[in-house]
Length: 462
Image (tube, rainbow, N blue to C red; front, side, top):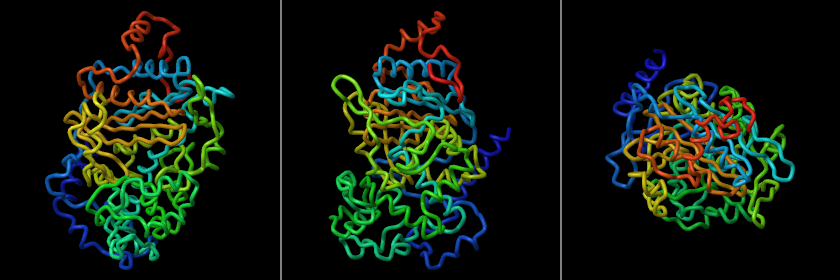
């Protein structure tokens, strides 16, 4: 009953916020007019304005559902655990962790395989992985927390917090808003200066070089995925809150949500009691490496480390079950598609993107999809030796995340497999695994079959 009341309030807040609460972004208050953080009482998050019917390939906005649909009776967590275990068998991938949440509860949060092929330890629920671009959801969320407190606006100009910011178009830097940064609408070509990140150039130098980068469009007019420009939000958070970006996320998100294994940066992952080493191909197997510091230098874009236990709590919060930390109107805003990303649907034939997506867009640190007619909020991430995917289905109050410590693409098929099952869609083989054989062994009571152990947030791997 409590969940239903919360969802009705959430839906009502969405309707009121989008229909009647806002002036257009262009008319917003500038940073000089904002009161200081200490003077502001908490308030409802400022929603984005109503957008016209999408013509750029993004999904239409939808209010959060009042009541969650139940999962199909055939939805079987043990089946997915068996798939995860099969992926680490014979070191197809060295290690993997997966969490599944529903109605604010953790259905499974476990580790599979090993942390390091050179010094094998089992992956468990508290083994820390590098999140790569899954980190962007934390950047959007911490900015949103400041907006919900009244210390920041989505249409605040970045230059008000970074007076030295310059772009090739002299007027462009004056126009870039916080929402533009978080939705990759700065106006730069995609992946601007990513090669320089990989070459070891520091963040401050790369920000200065933005003045030399060609513009693809005016700010706010087009989408171009960024890591350097996206990380400008870290400077905004520091100027607004008086806390370093990583400190603000730790104090306002990690700690209150119980994400006790989470950290930022290379020092953070190396200080973890147990962490998964990155792996790359070597001969016909894998070799482990030390993580590179490169993308850690753009912390808002790619700096978070976390365990699967942490990520289960992150999904529970983003599915609306921690309104004490993330207010419902804020979540509705973060998960709204702001700009179309139709290029995602032009994926290779037979992939889940080409087969399932009817529309694709980007919100504020999250991707938003029309997935076979259903709203899915998603983000993926990859950096040398680490990959991950996370997704939520708002209509089912459902979420899942998979993290793994290798450059293999095999585990990425778990996401559409599980989402299809949660939505009751027709079976499609997204994984290179003979699922029928796995299920037969499991039903036959084979104690050595993958997935034979009971699911638990603290369970050890097989």
